[in-house]
Image (tube, rainbow, N blue to C red; front, side, top):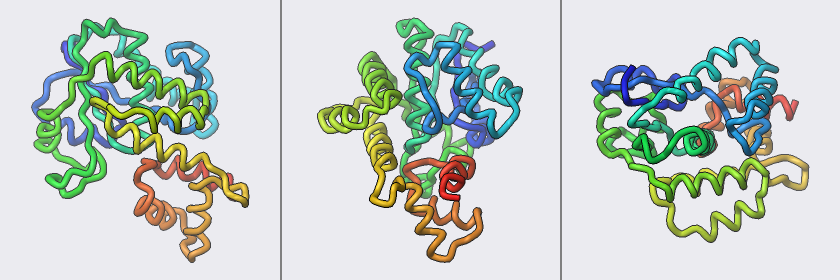
Length: 253
């Protein structure tokens, strides 16, 4: 076992990471905390039982155990360095909040050095939107610019997590407006601003995302794949995959 752990947000990043010469163990974070029920105590058995029950509506419970819970066991090891590979969108940033909350509760933060590596709109990478689009050398370039997280970022993450989990949209909006310094988490504000946008309901009773998907469908885009593509073209900030978009499409149906 290495003394270094890399936590990758999703399997798509694994191929590029494996092309690097970076040392360390790898943990794949496969949860989708931006959708479904949440509880404030992310270390509780109740939290993970609730998540497993919700996600297992669409896949066997054994798959959740293998893909998610077994991976989390890696956090029980003693690492001196933990690198978090997450992206700019709402999907990734909420997952990042969950990971930061777990690390704060689960580990002695004075022991491991914790770093964030985040791909935003990088011109040098041809405006790649996701880590899955990068090769090994580009991964290494991002790694060289990683951000060392400290107590400030963990306090910020704890505040955001509490507001997000409790669906306190008014409190979250106030918190986002009043914070002027984001430290190593500058992408948190636009992502959570997108969250506030998506929970607003219009006069027809539709959320922003539901209305957007309905508009795409009514414009003549009828197949699921074409709807996904049209949505991603303008709404990348939400970071939604086809499985997540299907949640909203099923509500519309």
